[in-house]
Image 1 (cartoon, one colour):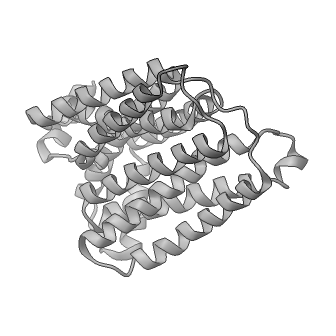
Image 2: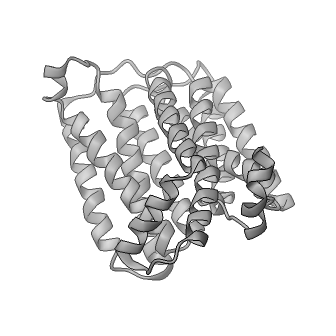
Length: 289
């Protein structure tokens, strides 16, 4: 659980650092829109230490996530990762001077309460080996995520953001399940394991869909879709096909904790892309000195 929470802290903090860097890069640039403009914006962001620090935290968070998935039920790890929005909200409140409402502070507390329940109720990871059919099912789901991105990209408004956010959530969910389906790291075995390709395709598709959703749609709607997609489906796969269980007699507490943590994360969905105020960006170098 400490690894899962460590991943949430890394992902949540990285979001804020990258938000600062992206806004600063946008303010200092004079390029046009479109793909060329997006590429130029990314290159300017990559020259800033905050963006690089955010990428490093993302990498560290992924390592923590893998470690957590190797020893905890998927439902517990998924809920913990969704709680990264609570970390983003708290860090944004301090570094970006974003004012949280009383409801949002309450949502942070709800997330923590839900994770506490999960920590008490979670058992060890399931002992079932994933079948070959499940591995191919994950690969097929990863491909469907790409197709969902093509369909969602043609929509407009909140429908577009929701579909792309859900697709990104399904993609990250594929990653969570695929990690559990990789039980032999020998190179010869890895190249023959469909779960490896599911992890790569699902993770890449999820990143692309989420980036598109956040750039061209409602951040709150996209992030809500992301949280739903990356928690509920993988949790069910872990329980039904991989044998994830709770401690004896605490099934009700695990279900309640999962629902509470996800509900709190949904209430904080607007922090899926941390808002950055101009004054906060200007003051950020001073605060970090």
